Image (cartoon, rainbow, N blue to C red; front, side, top):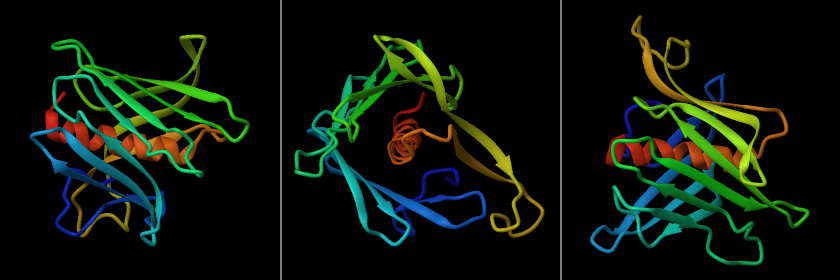
Length: 181
């Protein structure tokens, strides 16, 4: 994702390593005073993959995003626990195709939005499945000149839940942009 957050050209673009638009992400604050927001992950061709809705999307308070109930729902859920001057705690989960709830924890860096994502096993960190990083890149498809471009990247394990991780990356990206660290 190219930094900073910029919705002037529509949803935020999420690129593959070769510059193809793999997904798009949009977040709409339906009522900022009430904390109502909808976040949507779309394919590169603008087809909705899933939505997450929050009824308490405020900075500095516990925030929950949940997938609306439907026959296709995987009961996705993202929780943010602000901790003042300490690093916020982030968790997300979904129900896999076998009907088992999969839980994950994001260990965000103290001074930036980068960090590691671990599978959770009985409330403890399991395998490292992904990493979010702030980078400066100079890929030919990304630049128009010699300047490096600031990007937010996701690296993940082969068998990781990619769409869940991509939506999570976009939520971290937009939340930190809106609320700060």
